Image 1 (cartoon, rainbow, N blue to C red):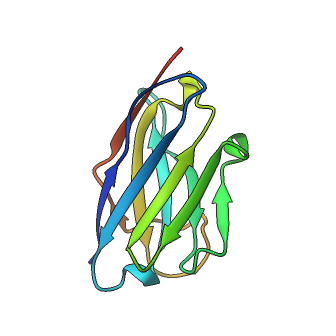
Image 2: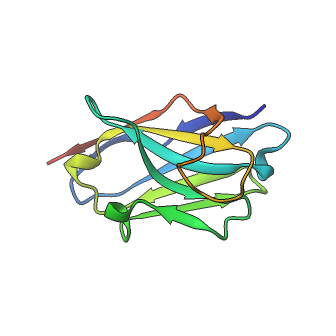
Length: 124
């Protein structure tokens, strides 16, 4: 079992930055692929970024490439999403997720564990 807790959300002006963190606990955290999803009101949940177990393979949603960076620290059982040059359309609830299985940060494989989410608001 893996427990996930997000932090770092909040209100930021357009063009600003936020760093989201996900604290993971559980016996097999380092063996999980992790990722960030977001869901804006009235929209479907979207896979934003993913990272494999070692942190060497990373995926960023094409529209966010160059603005978002994902990383993990297995020694600290944490994962981070650095978001720069934020836009109003980035506003959403951001969820941390983890799964076992194939060691590739793909959203095509279902995630098993989810955090409660952290709200990101971006003012124009």
